Image (cartoon, rainbow, N blue to C red):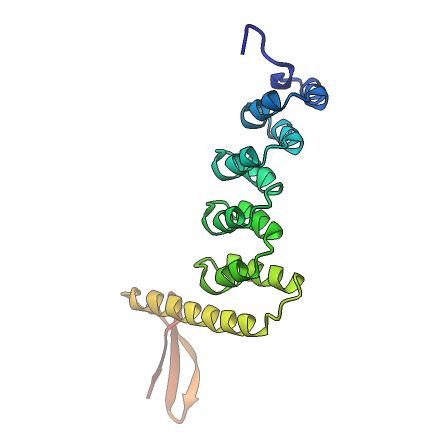
Length: 190
Ligand SMILES: [Zn+2]
């Protein structure tokens, strides 16, 4: 880097911003996009980068999720976007990838198979905005959501070792029903 710190590394934000504004050398912009200490400055540099391969690299590997998201916003390669949408650890990065994803098959795959419920929902919304019929996907997702909630409830009830029963009302005849206030399990006793 030479002896002097480049202006875009300045702790003075306005000074750093002016420096990026004036910078047109792609090599230096790439360096700034990956190394500027301020994420807004990194984003400004990302917006000026023309090399698609570099944008993909930043989108997939930068350690800061907001910078991965900013670079993802400039990626058009559908297979890279699919990978980011299904593997990035940050949900905002995954959603940014889906915003640019036009590959219906990939989106349907996410909508059906992604283990993350919100990811599935975002994929369905994206398909809908692309004019796809998503009725069956929505139905399927709703059933899956209910199944997951039921399984979660059953897991909770199975691991509740000391139910704390509270009276929950008459159960018909002489029966009364009780609910465990810890796990939600219900029992009717005669
Ligand atoms: Zn219980």
